[in-house]
Length: 213
Image (cartoon, rainbow, N blue to C red; front, side, top):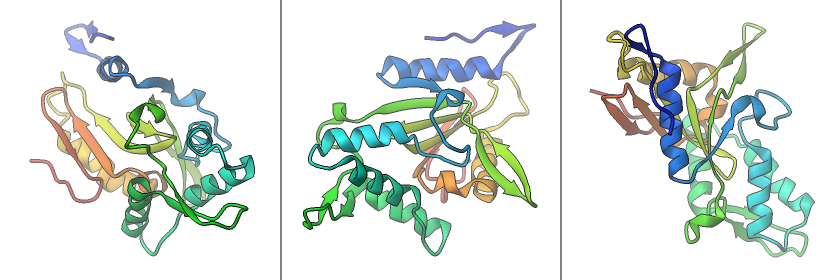
């Protein structure tokens, strides 16, 4: 597991990030740097390879085209509001997606295997740049850490430097609940969970309702 390094009496925030990732690796999560993830565009927030591999593994009767259709259905999700979209995706994560394959018999396709956890692909990712458009210009946001399950970013994590007295978990909360919802809602549509921490205080909640003390 990575350890915090000291620089002139101060800890580097990036070292805290990697120590956090090391804890998750010890629990069996696979680590990937965001710049190594296969994506057509930085607007893409799903890991296509993990998603398709999970669906194909757990549904061997589906064709490659059908697996791609399910992926596109999840990738292109939309509803009347951001909250409604998040609620819709959460329902899919819990209950599965209804899909009608070529044989014409509709069935539910699980996006997460709750019965056999080892079938799932757990991946912790940092340096995952998410692109958005601001006044016609392309800009980026980069969450500290994202936890993906079967290619879906279920949890967003913001970490603040434990040695910086001015960096609070409220700053982390604002980053997610104000700036990220404003700029990259297409990522948060898949994130029912948010975690914020400064190394001393850690809070876990949703991306829409939780306000830290």
